[in-house]
Image 1 (cartoon, rainbow, N blue to C red):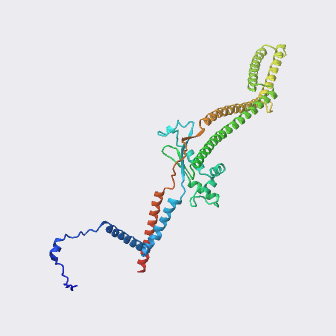
Image 2: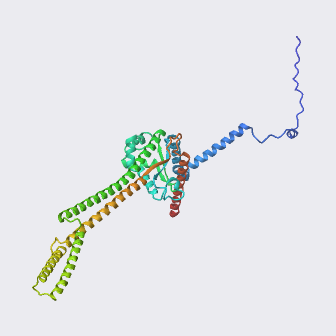
Image 3: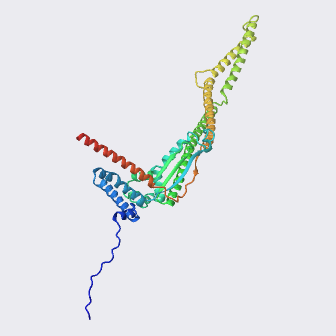
Length: 417
C-alpha cells in the first residue's frame, strides 16, 4: 500500500472581520433602564436601607431612644390594648323631666310645651344627684348585683377590682353613668354604660323606676306634711272653739242670765222709770205741802212713797254697780270677755277650715310626676371604647410629654455649658 502523503491541514478561509470601529457604530446603544425584576430588587434594597436607617435613628441616637421610650412603646401598648384587649361597653340612653300639675300657668315661653318652670330645674338637679347617690347604687346592687357585673364582665383594666371599697365602687358607678341637665328644654339626659346590652337596658329601666318612686314619694310626702299641719291647726281651732263655748255656757248657767247686757239694759230702764216716778212724787209733795199740813195723811203717804222709791233705786243701783263680784257690771265684763274669746275662736276655726281646703287644692295641683320623654333602648353596637379617638389623644399627650422632656434636657445642657 503506497504511503499516503499527508498534507498539512489548510486553514479555513478567513472571513472578512469587520472593523471594530465600524461595528460599534453599527450596533444600537443599550438601554439604560434595567429590566423590571432588577428595578424591583433595587427598590426593595433602598427601602430596607431606609428601614435600617430608621431603626438606627430610633435605637442608636439618644433622641431616638427617648422618642421610642416615651412615645412609640407606650402608644404601641395602648394600641394593642384598645384594639385587642379592651372590653366593649354598650350604652342605653333615656331622657325625662319632672312635671307639675300647675306647671302651665307660670311657664316661660319656649318651655311651656314641656311644663318647665324656673323652679322645676331644682327638681331636675335634685333627681340628677339622687341617681348618682349611694342610695341608688345600693338599690341597683340589690336588684341586679351590679358590683358582680362590674367585677366579672370587663377586661382586667376596665373591670372593678374585687377588693374595691364602697367608695371605689361608687366612683366606678359614677364613671359609667352620665346624667346631665339640659338647660334648653329642661330635661335630664341619662347615659348608662354596661358590658352587656341587655343588662345595660335593665339597669336603665331600674333607675327610671326608682327615680319615679323617689319623685312620687317626695311630692306626696310634702303634700301630706302640709295637709297634716293644716289639719292639726283645724283640730286645735275646733278644740278652742269648744272650750270657749263651754265656758260661756257654764257662765250663763251659773248666773242664770242668758245675756247680762240685756239684763243691765232692763235694770237701767227700771231705774229710769223709778227716777221719773221719784221726781214726780217729789214735785207732788212740794205742791201738797204748799197748802196742806205736814201731818196730813196725803203728805205722809206721799213721803212714804218717795222713801220707797229712793230705797228701790238704791237697790237697783247696787245690782248694776257694786264692789262685789256679783254686780251686773262685773258679770257683763266677764261675759263680754268670754264672748270675745268665743268670737275669736270661731274666726280662727273658720280660717283654719278655709286654709285646709286651700292647702288640699294646692297640694293636688302641685303633685309632681316623672315624665319619660325618650325611653331606654337595647344597644346593638358598642359605643365605647372609641379606639381612634383614644389613640389620637394618647399620641398627642405622649408627644407633649416628649417635647417637654426634650425641652428640660436642652435647658439642663445649656446650663451645664
